[in-house]
Length: 304
Ligand SMILES: C[S@@+](CC[C@H](N)C(=O)[O-])C[C@H]1O[C@@H](n2cnc3c(N)ncnc32)[C@H](O)[C@@H]1O
Image (cartoon, rainbow, N blue to C red; front, side, top):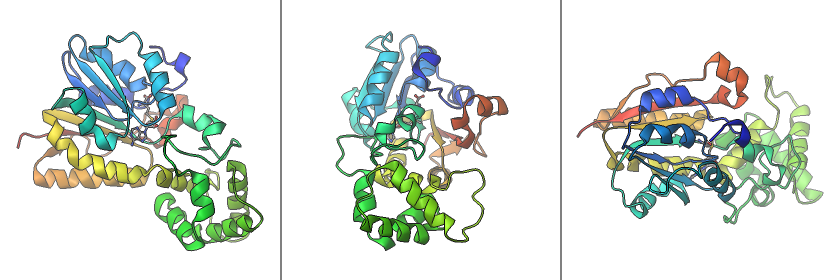
């Protein structure tokens, strides 16, 4: 279960282990199993007798996780292809009514980002796809070419917090007159040219197309909806004393988690163990650039 062979280093492993503190015999639900990075460090902690249930939307990631975790006994590990928003169905299929810990490590992983064929990256030319679940119908190319200028601008503003959303949407519609926008490079160039043609403020170190790509990915995969659907169901399935850990990579997701935990505190269902979200230490940030935007919140289910 080595890291390097699989290319994806899980983020914030030390605080996840410390705060969840999984013990032998416990049950962990991993809603975003990805390449099995967190699974590979959590599973040894619940042995012997523990159970690890993993859910993943992307079949390619799931087969990589299966390979990585091939040594784990079948009575310990169960992996499901599906959406974490439907986690109660998978728990039922696993014959479980409660779990001790739940982990959500949101967004996408480096293997998805680095594969040009998946269309997630403005840095690598590929088809504008961006689906986690490749059985799903709508891809980024469908949204970019079908939505009207106003709806595109709203999408970039809402899901990407892009301040120049209108200018970019306008440029995209102009480019569309010349033909369908099919690739990541054509879209990235359209965004760059929109931003080059006006005063849109300093962008710091981020690529000009970062927010537009984020917005499209969030929309294509219904990422905020899935999180909003999932969180209110968690308290029913987490045993009192059990813990929920959520790692988010952008402020919209972190905001949803924060608001959920604030309401849960008022209702008396959760106690937050992280007053402020935990971020990666300098060494991890240097080693793994993906960790730089990661924020971890952990909360404990309270007996009600
Ligand atoms: C940041 S990665 C998780 C990495 C994993 N913790 C590891 O250590 O390998 C997020 C994963 O969640 C998956 N994903 C995104 N939305 C999902 C959803 N609604 N249900 C299940 N999996 C989802 C993505 O396909 C991606 O593989």
